[in-house]
Length: 270
Image 1 (cartoon, rainbow, N blue to C red):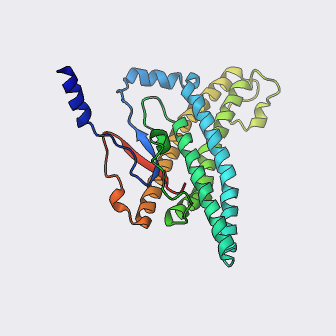
Image 2: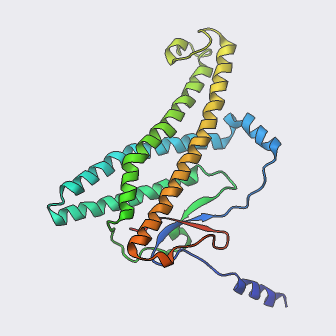
Image 3: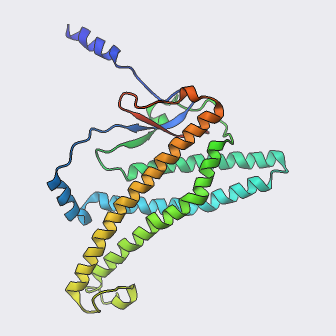
């Protein structure tokens, strides 16, 4: 009797994967617990010692490195593909290489998204990690409106996003640490690290100022990481929708949630 019930429950639960012909990332649902106000206050007070804070520092560092490396590569590829348009074959080859590069960069963005995801939150997994057969049947990169969207994203939006959201926040975080360490390290000149507040030699006021800046920097680390992750999800879903529309496969697009899972496709050109 118990065996029959188990079989019925198994049959009633459909198995879902990415639609055939796509290569995507699935937003895995996590069991979310309601956070108590006391634990939230405790997390805020101990945020400088929380591992996730330093995980965000690594995330912003890698995000800044990714934007720094991707901008010249994508820009050079775009200029070369346009300049070689008169040479039809050569220009098309460069364009395919550019699209493949943009696809790999988007995969790295998905990995960075997971780096800045807290335990109990949603994370993105590659489609091939769930099902090795969920890949595009066309193994060649195709130049489409979707790939043009991502190329423009890495040339126009990614650099200022990394400059403001990662470099600026990391600079403020480093400045706060330097402010705290200034009274204890004679090599740090309080007037030389652009401090506006207590004069040099004022130990306790300097430390308090550094702690204030540290908490502000940690808050901005969280806000900036959330904004960057939201941009990654938005660009990924736009890339999937545009590719499906250009291929005329709108009927294959997932509508809504499927068994509590939201599928986010970021690449269909591999």
